Image (cartoon, rainbow, N blue to C red):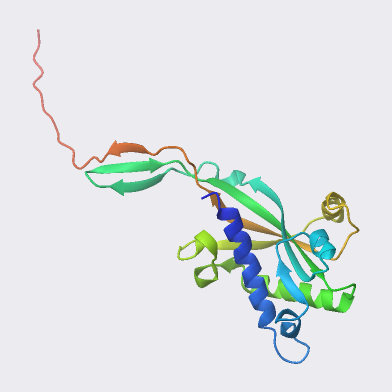
Length: 204
């Protein structure tokens, strides 16, 4: 579905926000994110700053085609009456998210928030089951998350596009983000059995 991007973004945002709320105890982040001044948002860091929001920006900044999965086979779906539908394979994508903590220029809190993000996604690199949101909920899909080792000039270009000064941030890549095709399915009859046929060869 074309809503897959929004569903994956919300899945990631919800997982990270729940992880912040679970960080209870002395010095934990739960007090900041539970009805406090901090939020987990899909807005860009600049948009959050303009709205005077603090917390964590989970910003989808790049979408690219997954070249390693372009040759995926069509999806075969059985139908009644001895037919099958061959559905065109979905468009495989890789999503890139910039994780940026914002805390009113408080580097200690920002580093703790980013450290919690790294801890959560290192401990849970695959999001599935009850963690899924949107049209992913109730499916058996898995959202895989991987920390990207971007060079300083690469991440600097992202901040140049934001027209803002560089802030502490990291990038994560999410895979298995598929956009379904809207092309009509091709229907074919099933081959239920084969029968040998015999003939007699005679000379002229």
